[in-house]
Length: 66
Image (tube, rainbow, N blue to C red; front, side, top):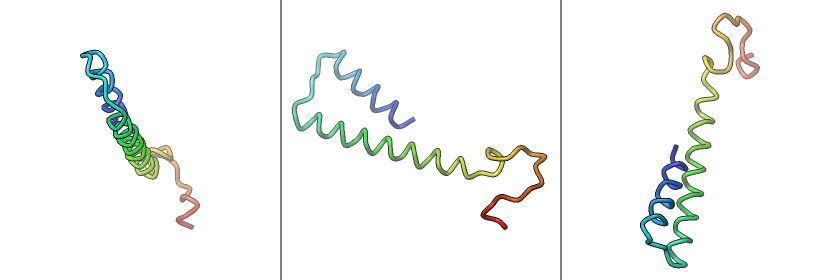
């Protein structure tokens, strides 16, 4: 989600004719890395939810709950 916003920002800048200078590109690379990191953390937290990992009728406990 965050990475998509950064890609949209870069596309918007290039389509409007505003090309960033060297420091602007370095800042966009840093923001892209941060956005990718935040997306990974968001999906890592959602993958730990029991509803998403096991079907609702599963009775077996997760390995870390034993």
